Amino acid sequence: MFNLYDLEVIHEAQQKLKTFSITTAKKADHYAKVEELRKFLHDNCESLNPYLFDPDYLFGFEQYKKAVNIFYQDNTKAQLDNKLKYALSQIRRELYECAAIEYQTQEGILVPHPTQQGVWIQAQEK
Image (cartoon, rainbow, N blue to C red):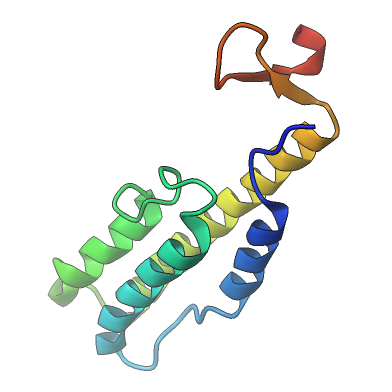
């Protein structure tokens, strides 16, 4: 049996993400939210895949961070809240996809390619 991702870590991250507040009381609180979300990614997701959950390359987080740090004056609190919601939904979706891939490897649907290292294929293609 092959393991790409640790399901326990995925489920733990999903549970912590559910408790993550999707809005702030004041617009200025978004500065702290950027760092809180970066810390969440580092502490809970980077162990799964450091490239997939790298805050500098995760599109939703990057857009949220830019909106707060660069275009703060151009955005309303509601717009920043929406960007935060989008970033969280992208992280949630990536965690779901990691779990789905892991379940497929456990069920034998995905298997390692016989000649190419690091490549996974459908079992019937083998």
